[in-house]
Image (cartoon, rainbow over all chains, first blue to last red; front, side, top):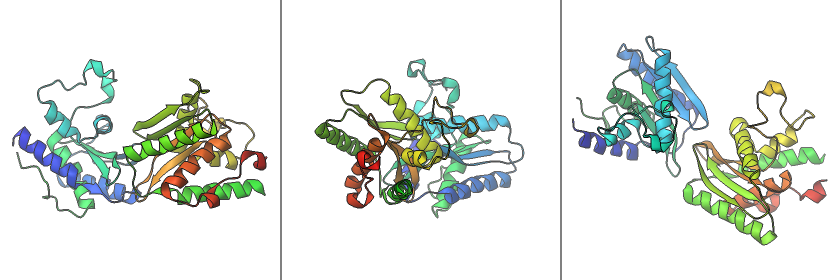
Length: 165
Length: 169
C-alpha cells in the first residue's frame, strides 16, 4: 500500500461511483449496508448519510458512542468543504497537521481531517452529500462508505477496492 | 377564488420546473438571464443562486442595499427547510402575522415569510438549492425567478405565469 497508489484508486472510485438518481430509499439502503458491514465485523460503528440540506440516515451498531457521531459529522463536513473523499484529503495532505490551517479562517473543531466520508456524486450535478462512517481505521471507514455506495450502484465489494494493508 | 388559483398555479410551477441536470454553468446562466431581464425592465434587484453547500451566483443592481442579501438568505433558508417556493408558503399560510408562530420554531432572524425564492429541483436528485430574487414586491420577485426558469427549461411561460401584481390585487 502506497499513498500514491491509494490516491489513484480513490480517484477512480470517485469517478465511477456516481448516481443517476438518489432519494431517501437509496440513502437508507446505503446506511443500512454500512451498519450490516459493521455488525458483521463485530465493531461499533456509526454511519451518517447526508444531503447538504439535511440528514437522510443515521445509524449505529453496539459499541458506537457519541464520540463517533462527532467524527461522522465532522468528516462529512470536510467532504462538503472540499468535495472529495475525506481519506483522499488525508493522503493528499501527507505529513501536514490534521487541522485546517489558521489562514483558512474556519472553525477547525467543526472539521475532521480523517478518512471515512465519501461524496454522494450525482451525474450532471456533482457532490450533493456524503456517506460518512466512523469506528474502524480511517482506511476501513472509507472502504465501508465506498462499498455501500458501490453496492447501491450494483457493484461488488471488490470493485474499486483499495488493496489490503 | 383568486388565492386558490394562485396556489394551484404555484404548485404546478414547482411540479413542472425541474432540471434534467444542474451545474455551475447553468447557475450562472440563470443568474445572468435574471440580471439582463431586470436591466431591460429597469428593476433594482439582487439575484442569488445557491446549492445547499455553497453560493454559485450573486449579483446586485443599483437601488438595492445591504439589506437585500439578508432577505435572500432568509428566503433561501425557508425553501431549504420546507421544500417549497417561499411565495407558496406565503399564499398558503393560515395565520395573521407576517412571521412564523413561535411553535414553528422558525426564528424571524433566519427565516422570512416572503416570496421570491424557488427550489432548484433536479430529476432523480430532488431539491438541491434555491434561486432567489429580492427587491420588488414578493409576487414580482417570484415571477422573475419563474420566468427565468421557464425560459431555461423551455416550459410554457404563458401557462405557468402568475398574473401581474396589479391584476392580483
